[in-house]
Amino acid sequence: MDPVEALEHVRQSCLSHEGAYEKTSHGSPCFFVEKGRQFAAFVDNHHGDGRLALWLRAAPGVQEALIEEDAEAYFRPPYVGPSGWVGVRLDRGLAWETVAALVEEAHALGCPGRR
Image (cartoon, rainbow, N blue to C red; front, side, top):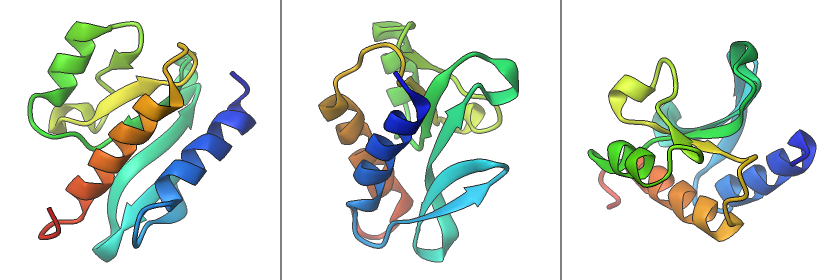
Protein backbone atom coordinates (compact mmCIF):
# COMPACT_ATOMS: atom_id res chain seq x y z
CA MET A 1 0.00 0.00 0.00
CA ASP A 2 1.16 3.50 -0.81
CA PRO A 3 2.12 5.45 2.37
CA VAL A 4 0.27 8.60 1.24
CA GLU A 5 -2.93 6.63 0.64
CA ALA A 6 -2.52 4.78 3.95
CA LEU A 7 -2.05 8.04 5.85
CA GLU A 8 -5.22 9.46 4.31
CA HIS A 9 -7.20 6.41 5.46
CA VAL A 10 -5.67 6.66 8.95
CA ARG A 11 -6.26 10.40 9.13
CA GLN A 12 -9.90 10.02 8.10
CA SER A 13 -10.47 7.30 10.68
CA CYS A 14 -8.69 9.04 13.56
CA LEU A 15 -10.14 12.51 12.97
CA SER A 16 -13.71 11.18 12.71
CA HIS A 17 -13.77 10.82 16.51
CA GLU A 18 -14.88 13.57 18.86
CA GLY A 19 -12.10 15.84 20.06
CA ALA A 20 -9.39 14.16 17.99
CA TYR A 21 -6.65 16.25 16.44
CA GLU A 22 -3.43 15.62 14.54
CA LYS A 23 0.01 16.83 15.45
CA THR A 24 3.48 15.81 14.30
CA SER A 25 5.41 14.18 17.11
CA HIS A 26 8.89 12.71 16.78
CA GLY A 27 8.64 13.24 13.02
CA SER A 28 5.43 11.23 12.53
CA PRO A 29 1.76 12.16 12.18
CA CYS A 30 0.17 11.42 15.56
CA PHE A 31 -3.37 11.69 16.85
CA PHE A 32 -4.44 13.03 20.20
CA VAL A 33 -7.51 13.79 22.30
CA GLU A 34 -8.23 16.05 25.25
CA LYS A 35 -5.35 17.01 27.52
CA GLY A 36 -2.86 15.89 24.88
CA ARG A 37 -3.40 12.17 25.34
CA GLN A 38 -2.05 10.38 22.30
CA PHE A 39 -4.05 7.45 20.94
CA ALA A 40 -2.39 6.73 17.58
CA ALA A 41 0.82 7.21 15.61
CA PHE A 42 1.33 6.64 11.89
CA VAL A 43 4.80 5.31 11.09
CA ASP A 44 6.49 4.59 7.78
CA ASN A 45 9.75 2.65 8.00
CA HIS A 46 10.42 3.76 11.58
CA HIS A 47 14.21 3.59 12.08
CA GLY A 48 14.45 1.34 9.02
CA ASP A 49 12.10 -1.37 10.29
CA GLY A 50 10.43 -1.68 6.86
CA ARG A 51 6.92 -1.41 8.27
CA LEU A 52 4.05 0.81 7.17
CA ALA A 53 2.07 0.78 10.38
CA LEU A 54 -0.19 2.41 12.90
CA TRP A 55 0.64 2.25 16.61
CA LEU A 56 -2.50 2.26 18.75
CA ARG A 57 -3.35 2.51 22.42
CA ALA A 58 -4.89 -0.84 23.45
CA ALA A 59 -6.67 -2.30 26.47
CA PRO A 60 -4.77 -4.77 28.67
CA GLY A 61 -4.35 -8.12 26.95
CA VAL A 62 -5.33 -6.90 23.48
CA GLN A 63 -1.77 -6.54 22.22
CA GLU A 64 -0.89 -10.13 23.14
CA ALA A 65 -4.14 -11.54 21.74
CA LEU A 66 -3.78 -9.78 18.39
CA ILE A 67 -0.14 -10.78 17.97
CA GLU A 68 -1.00 -14.38 18.82
CA GLU A 69 -3.88 -14.29 16.33
CA ASP A 70 -1.83 -12.85 13.43
CA ALA A 71 1.86 -12.05 13.96
CA GLU A 72 2.16 -10.89 10.34
CA ALA A 73 -0.38 -8.10 10.85
CA TYR A 74 0.23 -7.12 14.50
CA PHE A 75 3.37 -6.46 16.52
CA ARG A 76 4.70 -4.92 19.74
CA PRO A 77 5.91 -1.44 18.76
CA PRO A 78 9.06 0.07 20.25
CA TYR A 79 8.76 2.63 23.07
CA VAL A 80 4.99 2.27 23.61
CA GLY A 81 4.69 -1.52 23.27
CA PRO A 82 5.66 -2.17 26.90
CA SER A 83 2.66 -0.01 27.87
CA GLY A 84 0.32 -2.29 25.91
CA TRP A 85 0.08 -0.38 22.63
CA VAL A 86 -0.25 -2.54 19.53
CA GLY A 87 1.35 -2.09 16.13
CA VAL A 88 -0.94 -2.67 13.15
CA ARG A 89 0.71 -3.36 9.79
CA LEU A 90 -1.04 -1.37 7.07
CA ASP A 91 0.83 -3.26 4.37
CA ARG A 92 -0.58 -6.70 5.18
CA GLY A 93 -4.06 -6.42 3.67
CA LEU A 94 -6.11 -5.92 6.83
CA ALA A 95 -9.59 -4.64 6.05
CA TRP A 96 -9.93 -0.92 6.76
CA GLU A 97 -13.02 -1.75 8.82
CA THR A 98 -10.78 -3.77 11.15
CA VAL A 99 -8.29 -0.91 11.42
CA ALA A 100 -11.13 1.58 12.03
CA ALA A 101 -12.50 -0.56 14.87
CA LEU A 102 -9.06 -0.63 16.52
CA VAL A 103 -8.77 3.15 16.08
CA GLU A 104 -12.18 3.62 17.70
CA GLU A 105 -11.10 1.58 20.72
CA ALA A 106 -7.77 3.44 20.95
CA HIS A 107 -9.60 6.77 20.86
CA ALA A 108 -11.96 5.64 23.63
CA LEU A 109 -8.98 4.59 25.77
CA GLY A 110 -7.46 8.02 25.24
CA CYS A 111 -10.59 9.68 26.65
CA PRO A 112 -10.58 8.80 30.35
CA GLY A 113 -13.97 9.15 31.98
CA ARG A 114 -15.88 8.81 28.69
CA ARG A 115 -15.92 5.00 28.52
